[in-house]
Length: 169
Image (cartoon, rainbow, N blue to C red; front, side):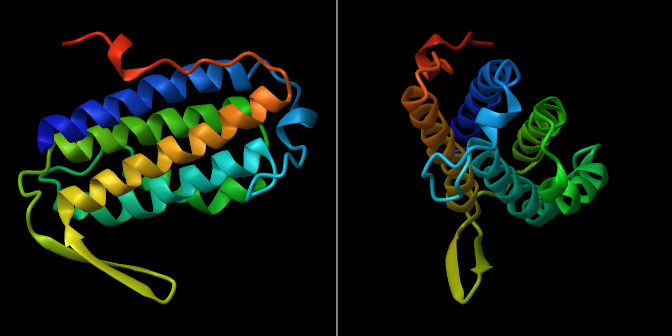
C-alpha cells in the first residue's frame, strides 16, 4: 500500500509541477475567467484542490505519521489565505510544498489499515487510512483533469505528463 501511495503522490508532484509551469505562463485574466467548471475558473478549481490536500490530507492525516511534515504549520496557515491569493507563482509554491508534505506523511505512516472516519459536511465516511489517502490523491487528479480540459477549450497546449513517463528511483 505504501509503495502505491508514494507512486501516486510522486506522480501528483510531477504532474502538478508540469501543470504549474504551464499555468504560470498564462495571463491571469484567463486563469480567473469562468470556464464553466464547477468552481468556475481554472484558478478557483486549483484552489479547491489545494484546500482539500492541505485541509484534509495534511491537517487531518499528519497525525498518523511518526514525524509530521516540517512545513505543516505554514501550509495550514496558507489554507486560510488561499481564497485571497490569485498569484499563480505563489499558488504554485504552496501547491508543490503541500505535495512534498503529502509525500512525507505517506513515508512516515506505518499503518494504512486502521479505519478512520472522515466527516465532510453531513456525510461521514469510514474507510481504511490507505483508502482515505488514495481518495484525496485521486481528488487532485480529477481536478487536474478539469483544468486540462479548460485549457484545451481555450486552445492552450497542455500535457502534464503521465505516470509511465516518470523516472524510477
